[in-house]
Length: 445
Image (tube, rainbow, N blue to C red; front, side, top):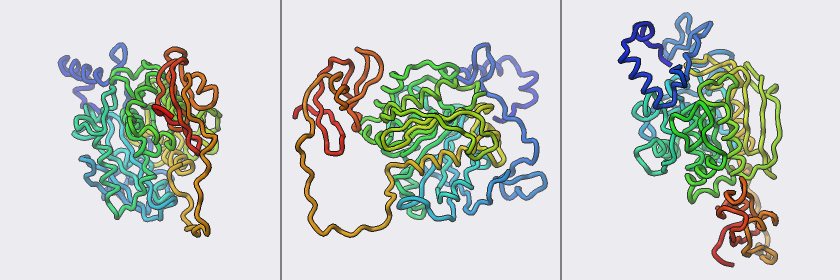
């Protein structure tokens, strides 16, 4: 966050203070009693980060910083999605699938895309995986102080009045650039604070576009700009908002991944939102197996904390990390740090990229061509597949559906397809089974 001038810090007129407080309150950046909900990141104890060509001057550490490996690619600035975007393109070959992965990273309020470029610690991970990194600046300076407009429930894939369409256009623009060679099955989105909230919005709004979302201290979808200091929504409300956002693309939830991370010392966004966000996405994905994992083996300068994993029958789907001692910051875990960026954390760029690459369910991992079959394949027999009408409770008992909450307000969803079946145990729904174990809501058999 840029420091205020000495006049504003020590003797600002009342009118200025009142206007600033009102503006910050509207964004949820002022808490009860008038205290600001954000703090200025402490200055680095050693060298400072200087952009090229000044990175060679005494006292400057350059954009890499710390112990990060030298970057083999390079940063450039371009317009994409109507936004000024910092773009890192590695010289290394793509690690997985038919092309390069794309990682879009969203800054927080009172933070800039160039701060994440210089201190977010992306280059080494991008080089390792042959991954393109895009860091856009919120359009027109954000709604205020650089904030993304993650809040409320009127998000759309086509509305030009919000930031959602800009981000979708950014992905489309970069996919259309053949020189980047991006694989549409490896498009990921991460973000801090308002950028984390917008990341969750986009993950719900366009699960077909984003194979994985990384939410760093982001408020849940459907919250207002003022609902950040305490959890103000229920799991059922957030689940319904997310599903409503997805519309006809809800089936893509079946292959999407989510990573959530936050710091134990975060006093800006209520820590409970992070657990809630992980639980919501695990429920939507049908990932009911929960386990814990240690942070001890992860890269970074601070591996204190805890990890929780939600999995389905095919493996991990949702990861939640609480990093002990970290505040409201992007967890770079290395490099030079910067505004709302800490190096006293795990190396989240490395962790979230590994999590997405290891568990991506959309990419073709077998690039080797296979010999054509010698005989014409035959369709599998359709006999024995279920199709019928029953109460939602009966469908659930038979393993055809799942639900959340308590009757009669508990929503039901068909297994695999995640088709909405209505509320309540007694509601009658007709389901049809596919050979792959998918159940779809149909009008008749």
